[in-house]
Length: 384
Ligand code: LLP
Image (cartoon, rainbow, N blue to C red; front, side, top):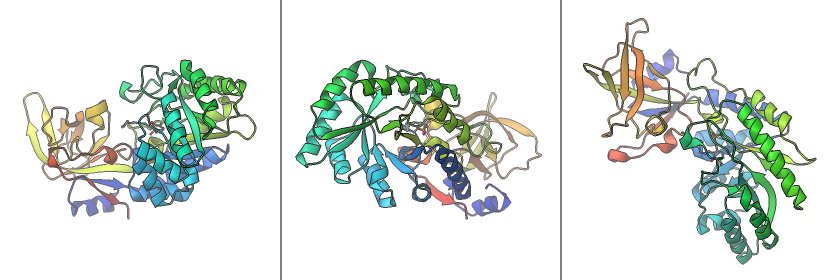
């Protein structure tokens, strides 16, 4: 929690850093677990959202699996203690080395994104006398109505197998004796807040699952991916997502055969709210048209505003709450005009040295940090 004692502790620390509220993380995980268990759904955490070790450990301990998109994520999952039988490996560009590592670790499933990849996994598995479990990631052509940079389920996107390629896919599977098709997989995009979009995904998934049955494949799993969005505007009013409503949609609209499992790959919805970027004001620059707060954190620590024009709530933790407010453009120290964190942000009159927080930064925040301008890679602090 960002209470008085926590902020007092921050005063003694070098900035910038990511602050993780582990209590809030536990609450979020517990709420997701209860809501998914209600329907017997399986959750795999999308590692790419945040691979901080304490965050990962908490997720492993609650019993979720791991959704990985690189060989290093697979390795990390196993190091942290995730059961390889709960590790899935997706991604359009898996290298031979990464596939071999997945095979050697006997991971649960490869989510395969092209017909060509099926052939490669089959060959690599055959050479090692193994059978690889695979799920076909299908591009369902469902519009996620989110920022176009984080939409993945349209035919113009590079992800998954298009529906017109499914016949070729099935032919490839029939001649691949070292592959076992266990399911189909979808992921239409991220930061989806309109639950009706998931309804459309269910309708499409039902059609496609039926198509596979008709072609003689019994699917053990339907993997509907992740994408559940969070409320970036009201971090205090909705600190934990409404997982009940989210899972209820799938329970209602996704048709399951007896014994068929439903898998989810949630990233953002599990870790966004527990993470905050803490920074200090270096300079206050008053211009004719704009006033700037120049922070010691920028796009190198939190890339989302520069890349997706994303909103993160910004608060001054040191200023007197009753002070007059001023509109500031909050920017970082990097030599790029896209290096901004908030535009026209209304804040109490601020000064050099004040602590500033960027809220809801736990997902796709620290993991996307870079060392551009030879900056130190941002570190983490935790709730006590
Ligand atoms: N499964 C697959 C196959 C994915 O590609 C992703 C995210 C997820 C699951 C998890 O999605 P989530 O539940 O977190 O929405 N950097 C962007 C988001 C990129 C998402 C990439 N894929 C951002 O900062 O908004």
